Structure formats: structure tokens, C-alpha cells
Length: 251
Image (spheres, rainbow, N blue to C red):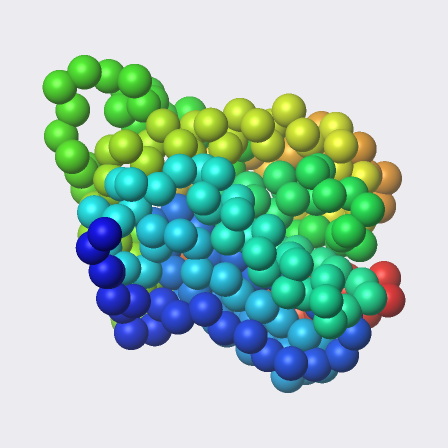
């Protein structure tokens, strides 16, 4: 089996803190670099125990990602959840893009575990016919151009694969479909963040998520000054402050 080295900056992170744990997930083809600021902020300002897993197949090479599945990505997050459960009494989960999707998936799958979830530009559907054609089409290329670094602020770059491995496209559709059907099982308090000017995830996702989760304690926050990778963009401090206040209110 080929050994794929981890890209510098894509390493998982763990910050030891209080008995309040926060799981922070990066997104599709992305790395922990995109959510490290958020993780560090919650650890330093909140004193929480924060873990940012590297999803399997990410942060190494597109060739490795092509061999992974949605079940592998979920398992990466589940492993991080188990780590937090061994140290913390209350758990929260947040994430960017597919990390937001995973945040909703986990909250729906493990309602007894999570005290709150905060998806950031999470995807339940894409409204992108060209991308959908890659899921089950024939004679497809091994990769297509990447979807990373959708950032409004000049000079900021996301550490992300430059291409999307086509076999992974089917997996993201599987994850989105399962998560969509789990939304009525999401009962914990929920903060839904969505950039109005998002060129990767259609902004219609946020109202759909907000309306279809079962949570009664919920808020939809529109990000007015960021593109898709909002955790690296102009609104990164706003997101971190809102999540910090959200967690503090619930503990």
C-alpha cells in the first residue's frame, strides 16, 4: 500500500482544555488549515478542548482521496468524537463546507452525544448539473478542476487539492443525501452560517437546513463579507465569536 505523506499545514490538531469539547471538521478536498484559526480561537478564548481531524484521503494527494469513501470521512470524525468523549462531559461540533455537512450528519446520528452544532456553508445539495454528471457518468476523467480557495479577502489562500478526484464526487452525493434525511433528527441547538456570496455551495442550503432540522433553539447567520471559505475570510472572527458565545450559553 502506497504511503502518502501529509502536506505541511494539513496535520490534525488537538488543543487540551476544559471538559467542554469541540470537534472542528474541514471540507471536501480541503485540510485542517482552513479551520485551524477557528479551532485555536475556541481553545484560547474559550478554554475548550478542541480537536480538528484530518479526514481520510485529505491533505496528502488526490490519488489517495480517490480511493476513499464517505464512510471513511465519517469514520475520521467518529474517531475524533471518541477522543473527545474520553476527555469531555459536553461535546459540540462545527465544520466548514463538507465539514458542515458532517456536523449535521453527526448531530443527527448521535443526538445523545452533541450539545450543539454549527455548520458553516454546509452542503445538503449543490444545484450543479455539471458536477452531478460526474457521479454516475461514463468515460470520465480521473480528476476535474478543484473547488478550493473561494475567498474574498486578497492574498489569502486555502491549502486544498488543485483538483477534485472524480470517484470522490459520488461519495459527496452519498453523504449529502444521507445527511438531508437525517435533518429531522438534528434536535440539539444549531447555528447555521451561510455566506451570501458563496461560489461553491448554493446559499439556498442554509434556509433548507434551518427549516428541516428539528431543533427549536436555532439561528441562521448570513455572512455578508466572505465567499465559501469563510473561516479564512473577512468573517472568520465573526464566526469564531458567534460559536464561542453559542457554546458558552449552552454550558
